[in-house]
Image 1 (cartoon, rainbow, N blue to C red):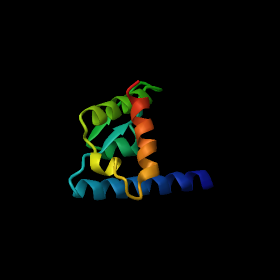
Image 2: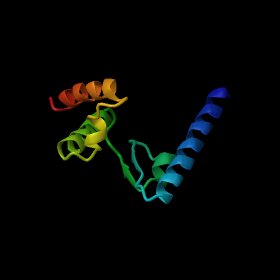
Image 3: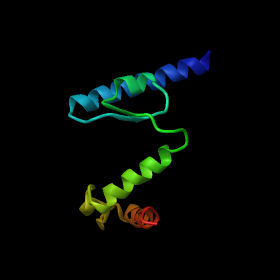
Image 4: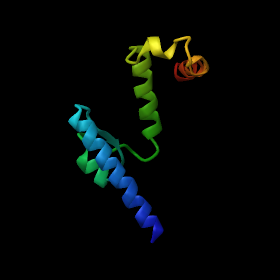
Length: 97
């Protein structure tokens, strides 16, 4: 019974978060081979084959990084994020492989 309750809370949090994001102009994309509740509320539902979602996400990261669709100044700033900048540089090198 607790398992069902936890799933309902997770679904509610997703639905509320995605509704707020949509109001702010975001598009919600769901990667799920099933037609789930989350998929039904999404702007785009990609029914990937099971086990291929990680490859899809890595592909997106590759595009985001190669086209610099992220805040470059923040990612490499020398302020309080220095340790995170080093981790981000390692992450960049892993994605490019």
